[in-house]
Length: 227
View 1 (cartoon, helix red, strand yellow):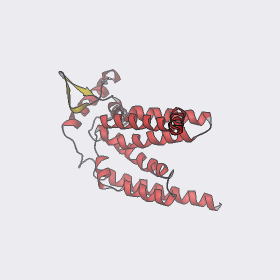
View 2 (cartoon, helix red, strand yellow; view 1 turned 120 degrees about the vertical axis):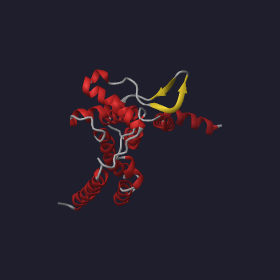
View 3 (cartoon, rainbow, N blue to C red; view 1 turned 60 degrees about the vertical axis):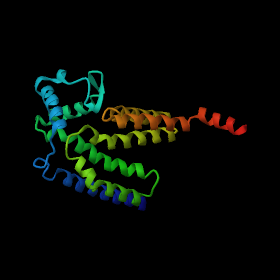
View 4 (cartoon, helix red, strand yellow; view 1 turned 135 degrees about the vertical axis):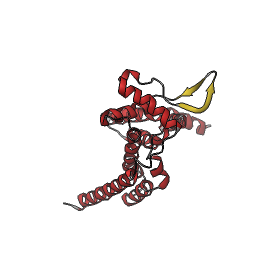
């Protein structure tokens, strides 16, 4: 095993240990300490009905956006959050409130791994590991990964959206470029359904970044400088 392979193996072991310990602190006493209030009860009731009666009962609209009243109704997010909970309930064949928190727990762990690769685009491997470890054991991050709530998985999809966009713009091969384009589009589509903050940030920043990197903008900039 050469030095490069040894270094990758070491990084993989350390990152694996971080994720394992992060998993442990997230599931510790999860059932007894489960946060379950009005929002969680509303969502659990909707998804439980779909699990018991069939996927045809899944709502076509997601949770309402806080106090955003419009006429006699509310602005609503997309239904992706409910579909994740539905899949969790079907896989574990249960409507226990703890089961509906599993998707947020799952995406929280994936976010640790993705954060390492994202930060590694700009920093050294050791620095990226340190950032991932600090994120993994942040009290706030742990707290919000232990219960079901639509914004809780947003951190993963924000990272995936911008990681996919950076890879898409910086990759030369057409086939690889298309793969990253699909990943970026899917991550942005899902993330924008988890919270209106995610919708505005993901769409707005992605659009602005593409505009700044586009040839059209570069040509306009050259023309302005020529004056």
